[in-house]
Length: 168
Image (cartoon, one colour):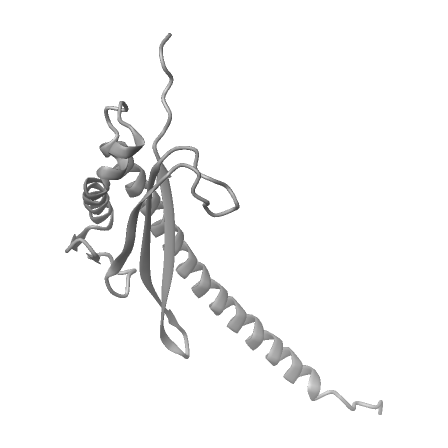
């Protein structure tokens, strides 16, 4: 008869590898779901802010001072567009979405005028004036064997006035 020491450890090792692989797969899928919802919200956020800038500067013949003075109007346009995208009711600060992916109201924590030359993410600077908005997005995910986990993701977006070609 041959030496069979370690024979019992092989099935145990195989079971451990299967359980570990399954656990990492479940956590990876959960993380992907949270990331997908966050990226989707960030894209909607950016498009709503771009819409607000375009709505305020529709005539394109306004100055940076005019843009600064129209910050409340831009905020109203942003609130309107973002609440429509989220299918949400809003009080101007909290967006109570009807979508099941949010774990509570999305909060608008800041909205301000951005002058030319303002530093933005990545070390760049704005070339034209615009607006900056900051929101907090509550996201939750149901992690197997652990339960529902909640996280709040802060998001910041800057949208500037688009330059137009002038006729000669």
